[in-house]
Each structure stands twice: as C-alpha cells, then as structure tokens.
Image (cartoon, rainbow, N blue to C red):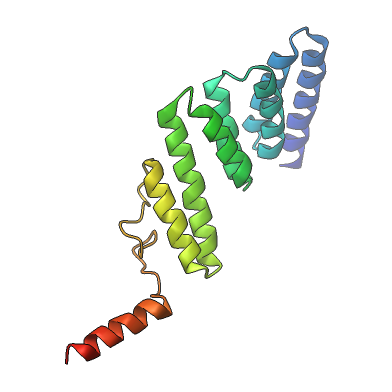
Length: 166
C-alpha cells in the first residue's frame, strides 16, 4: 500500500515537472487538478482547478468539479461560490450542486442539534430545486424520515389550542 502510494506521488511529481515545462499554464493547472483528483487528493485537486478557473472562467465542467471537490473537503462557502458561478453556464448542474451544499449545511446543523437552522437549510435546498433522494418532504422532516422536535412556542400553542377546544 505504501509503495503504491509512493509510486503515485512520484508519477504526480514527474507529471507536475513535465507540465510546468510546457507553455500553457491553465492547461497545466487543469491536468494537475485531474491528477490529484485521480488519487483522491481532493484539496490539492481543488487548489489546481481553482487556479485553472481563474484563467478560464467559462469552463462549466471544471467549475462543477471544483464545487464537488469543495463539498468533499467540507468547504461549503467555496462550493456554493463555484456553483453560483456555474449558474450562468449550466443552470441544472448548478442547482444540483447548490442543493447539495444546502443539504450538507442542514445535516451539519441537525447533528449539532440546531434543529431550526437545519430546517431552514433543508427548506433552502428545496427552494434551489435540485434533486436528491434524501430531500426532506416537509419543514419538520429530515433525511431518513426522522422528525425534528417541535419548538417550545409551537408546542405551547398546540397545548393552548387543545385546552381552548375543551
């Protein structure tokens, strides 16, 4: 395993050196991004793709890959920025990417027991209009069919409504 990783890194360094000797810096950055992505070095791949996009802002495929890589390394603001820039070039992919960002933010808030913030993020994901099998079906439901706990004010209002109906 270590030898295989060492060989991969050696090949990457050789490719990096060979590409730097070439003329086109943008294509060098793109090739390096692809190389690092191939060996699951997502942050390094994102760095090189970001440099490429700075030189070639109209490449929808790379903008999408950059947003996805940022999602993988939990850089959600950067991912959202990439997908917003992609909106002009490929709206459908951008919506799906922004949906993923909002969903991931919702899941982070949910695991931190910040249920209202989680619900807001899930609603924002639904408003973006992307598609995902884990999309919540209502404001109080999260992926997996679990229900969010009711807030105290809504629980009080339900109690008072049931008492007043007696």
